[in-house]
Length: 287
Image (tube, rainbow, N blue to C red; front, top):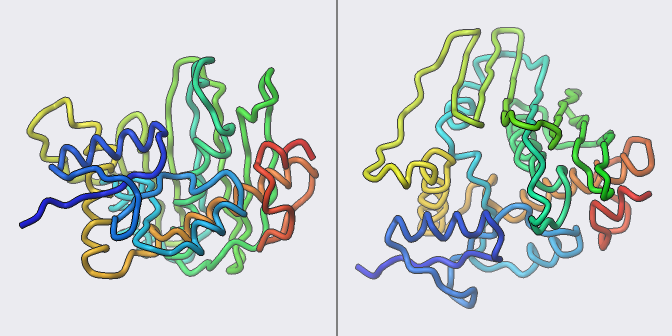
């Protein structure tokens, strides 16, 4: 049987992690081209125009965000219908600011908040709240004018308003949590610095990763290995799950762009986004 090969788009830290995961699985890393399965790490692009072009280009390309394949999030998705009619959907993360020498393409909206928004959108879809219809956001800026804190309210067509908070303002603490509450129960997950899930206050046992070499444990526990396996199986089957499609990646970016525009204008922004699709979130934050 021929060895599987995979293309990883870009040279970001996420792309490097995906390459390490593919090598751990014994796969070959190839340059993007005709006939090559490609994973595009989140965020899909820096502007909606570039995201549009990526979606329109077609081909065997998937959207990569390993949070969804962590054990805690997989179990949360499985149990989501058990909470009943949804009353609250929210997510919070905090972490230290990136080092000054880090090469950043954007602030907290394009990094920490990205996967939180993606998971919020996916869970809202799963529990019948449909697509986002408007976004209201505010941000805090660091000394260089980069957003280092963001509060985003996402209104869905089903009537629910979800809330996402992300910041780089902690000196020592790193945390990321997600909560889904309904009339019949509450699910609360943590995925950073370690994974956990509670249902109605009771700890849920999560499947532990079977790791042969402890140095590879982060690739398993952050969902990278499971994500690559899921995407590969989907390519073989001929249909990607919605959460790994470029169209979903563009939808997440659209919410982020709308959040930046909302913060820049100090008013809600309707979706689909009707503003400048060539503008980056940083440009839209400037108003």
